[in-house]
Amino acid sequence: MLLLMLLASMLPGCTAGSSSYDIVFAETENAPIDSRDDSPLPVRVAISSVLSPADTINYYQAIANYVGDKLNRPAILIQRKSYNEITMLMMNGGADIALLSSGAYLTYKQKQAEGLEAIAMQERMGVPYYYGYLVVNRDSGMTDINDLKGKSIAITDPASYSSYFFISERLAEIGETPEHFFGRYLYTYNHDSSLKAIIDRVVDAAAVNSLVYEQAKRKNPDLADSLHIIAKSKPAGTSPVVISSSLPEEEKQMLQEIFLSMHEQEAMKPALDGLFIDRFVPFDPRLYETAYRDKPSSRGSRL
Image (cartoon, rainbow, N blue to C red; front, side):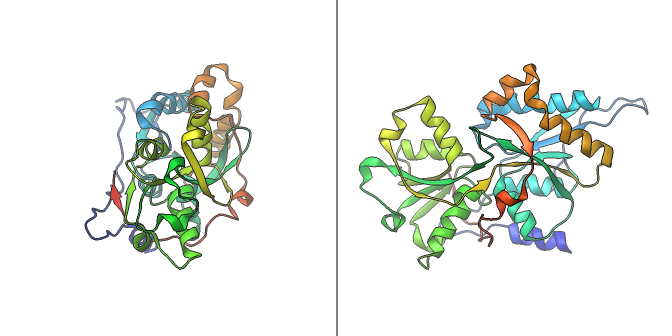
């Protein structure tokens, strides 16, 4: 029953003239299984990347392969489009490990659901937390969120803390909701695409992860001259590594050790660098305490 309630709470609605986004529940992916009875079962690692999937898939595959090698098991990388798909995949037993978004983790905890355990989190640019940035083009003349009334915005995902939750919280302070306030809003499903949407002027604003924005600015210093940050969220812990609670205790401990020591392995540095991860650090639930608690409804149109 709890699972059915959680499913219902995550299903999106749609605004007039907008299509809802799709969630595929309980899809699993099967690896070739050796016909011998003693062949090990594959370890299934699920991801929904905050960065461009095309640019990062090989790095995530390297992490999955590394975990599988350490466990002496084959590895499967399962990729899904939305954050909620990954959460439900884990809860339905379709994956053993996931790199979950902060917003999806907060939603899971708010519902007091069971089945997942956080074992580590990411340290990026020297810190294990990040912010949501609301950015506009500098020449737009807009200086705060009130200027976006009736405008368009790129939002990463309905379960993104730095995007949908942040914007919903800020609008609630002025008695508004995204559905009523914006003329149009688009789900891009990764922060790179949200940044591209604002740079290319497809939208009037974008709500993005601060770490993704700062990394993009390092690659292209001119970005700071063309974009303007007009709002900033409260801090939140970075994306946690979660595992299925059904795993044996010994395997849980092994997995935690594998992630916490991954940065010490020279062979894994290209993958971590490619994902802008300094290292994985012990999970600290206190870093999520200031994050937005009331999960808003999920509506919008796709980019």
